[in-house]
Image 1: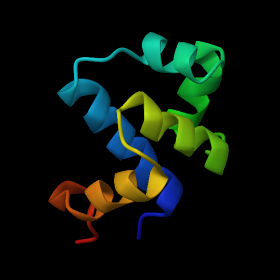
Image 2: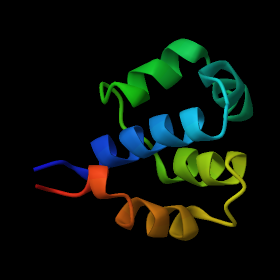
Image 3: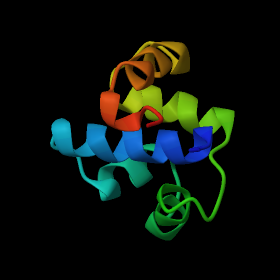
Length: 80
């Protein structure tokens, strides 16, 4: 069973690829070092609600709730 942290990390990876964005761009938008972003993306450090709200804005969602709706609609992220 996946936890929400790993689901967010997977979704963010998918969005980075789909939208042609780099991890460096995302780290900059989040005002964090790339190393800290990598820790979150590899689930070694937890995402905060503030992080996720900023991630949503980076990808042009209005808020984290809108990003969550996308999370629910990607079959690869659903439990098997």
